[in-house]
Length: 392
Image 1 (cartoon, rainbow, N blue to C red):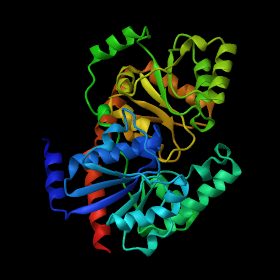
Image 2: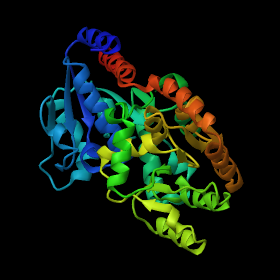
Image 3: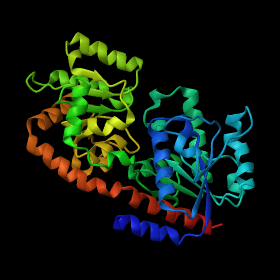
Image 4: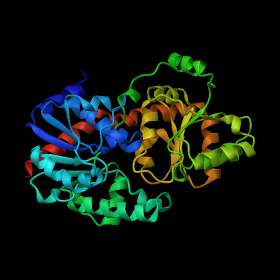
């Protein structure tokens, strides 16, 4: 056991028995950002502290390979016997939290049930981003208004708000006029598989088994306008032909992705795009480790988890100089103006031409990203849960 983990467990053993309730909707129903955050945090908590009783409250039970661990001890699950699941999560859940004698309730994704502020249950809400403010085109008008009301209400009623970056904290203060003292920043960590060393031979064997090229850039993210895949492909088209390398795209299918492919086909560079639709989650570290660089030119992020995943895998990152992205990348990222195709092209060219730069960023980034290890993050969460329980 590492010294850090030993210290964390010693620290945790001092805690009184606490019953923590979690909004587990995303654990069972979301398999991207919010779901990954929720599952990783809960998994790390379960390994770190036997003094915490972890109770998951979710509107719907969905069992898959990735949710199965949360349907067994040490987790205790609660699924309502009602067809009005949305109403239960918004309001009726509070009765069940009281019945189960929960000490602290953690809204893992922006929301708290109405009425919890009138109970003796301490509450904390995780705020990941305010994309509804930064990228209004991503949401329908009514959806945006509903989310805005829910998020603002939760921030006002919570005993504590946890932002996943300083950038998100600033956004909350700006848009919801919340006292700075009420907000604590606790960064995200990522799945443990990205922190394990990946052998280069394993990478080569994997690429060969899939008949994939050995030199490539990697894009991991949703296929939506804010993530900026279209401009990235435009930038690749502007590179000197001698520098062009394939781009592996880990993103779901969408009309936006179709638009990207249509452009690439028109410019006769579609042979450079590899859509990794059949990728297993467990194979993602190999793709990170083998890439020349991860390219993440998003216009706005609450944190930017693929950046951290990449740096743990010793791979440098090209990303935007906006929102939380500089926080996530630190010295392991080459920052550019993500709204400029010319800037992205220059950044790509710089990385592709300069192997020494890539190695330097890789080394600095891997050192920097150690602050996002689970031991550091979980210690902060346990301390906060204790503090909140003691306040009631």
